[in-house]
Image 1 (cartoon, rainbow, N blue to C red):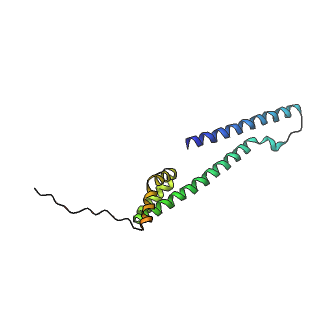
Image 2 (image 1 turned 180 degrees about the vertical axis):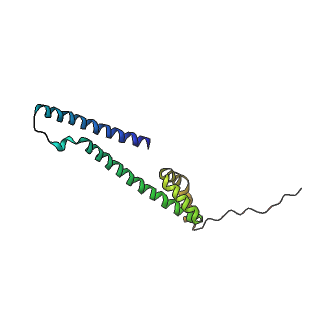
Image 3 (image 1 turned 120 degrees about the vertical axis):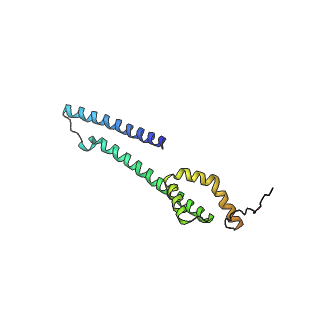
Length: 135
């Protein structure tokens, strides 16, 4: 996210620099008394629109990835047998941190789900024998 912020700032600064140059040319034309196009002079609006479009695309991608993370969380926790309150809580955190959740899901949980699907079994708690040690 820090890298993304730096990229957006660089794009915005470059766009603003280009618009500043256009503004300076506009002012020079005004001093010389030449005809000017007033629509071309509004450079900051164009930079703001470009930044808004980029941010909108990023938010849409984030929402798509967050939705995928919530789906994976709900699916996995349903197969394991967690209660609804736990599934809602884990899905909420998967929505807040989708990149972390999906990386953990792909690293650890997806193999477990594939194993459960291959064996056609439900998750069963391990049975610990009741052994007492007496002196």
